[in-house]
Length: 232
Ligand code: E4P
Image (cartoon, rainbow, N blue to C red; front, side, top):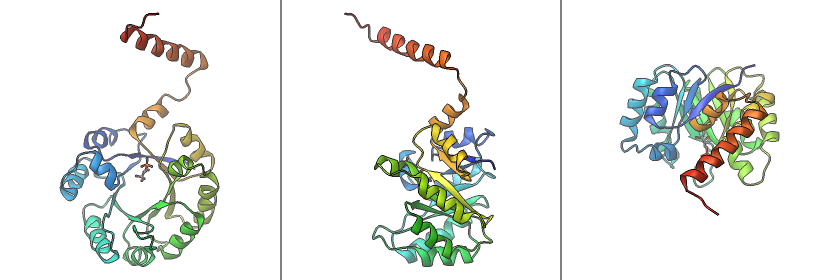
């Protein structure tokens, strides 16, 4: 099974460029990435992105915190394009499980990306709400877990196992921290991994020999010392 590579960015030029690159199968955005990209009008900015990314799946997240508002935003975002996945956080900022929202949208055949998932129990609860005939993604934030000293592999592996019998439900390795995470995701049979563009470029350089790596490292140190005109 192939582990698909998604690009985790809301930068318009990056999406435009990587949309033409066959290594990238799709895109994920979130409100923080939209802010970082300088989006002022959420809808217009998303529609601009969708003009250059018409086919590859792309996730846009709701940002409302009240369930009924989240629902309204989700229906609107879903209208933006056929390749759009609506990202719904597993809980709102009060920690309340967004199950009823997930259930309703999924029942209406809306493609969902359930985000900010950190536990197996959450995966189980999400699975109970999803319509198994509609494509859905469960995004597990591996990097943010390892940032806090928790090994994300057990929850990823168990979640993948739970989703195995549902061909439309895919587990996504989110919050990627290093290029090696791609190999780990492949090893455990994770359906998708989303990565910042810088890590995607690193993957393209996989397979470099130890000899070349050491020379490149030393070259980097040498060039920086020259640029800084270091003297002892
Ligand atoms: C996933 O879809 C998220 O946008 C993303 O992977 C979050 O990553 P971060 O932890 O680097 O913010």
